[in-house]
Image 1 (spheres, rainbow, N blue to C red):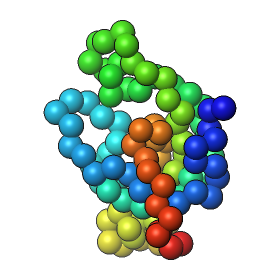
Image 2 (cartoon, rainbow, N blue to C red):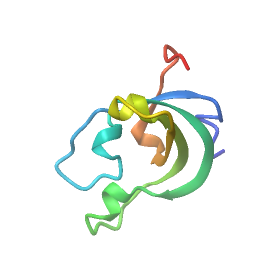
Image 3 (cartoon, rainbow, N blue to C red):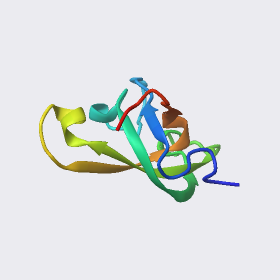
Amino acid sequence: MPGDRFPPGTRVRTFHHDPPHHTRLPRYARGQRGVVIEPEGPAELADVSAQGRGDAPVEQVYAVRFAARDLWGEGDHHVVLDLWESYLEEDPEHER
């Protein structure tokens, strides 16, 4: 069932990659650790559909919370990004 891979509270890390094409994974969030808030539902992977191809896979999108301090070295707030499942991997070593 969609949304089962990363239930709320799952600690994740985003992949650190710099593809030669469009990606919806912001550069500042690549390779960063966050926590899944909730699944947002399935959507076509924008990385593929932005290339004008008709074969974009549908993936689960997750709302993921990051500490601003982890992203930019300062700030006492959090940032929430909607990220496709293929951008994420479980990070059991992440402490929060």
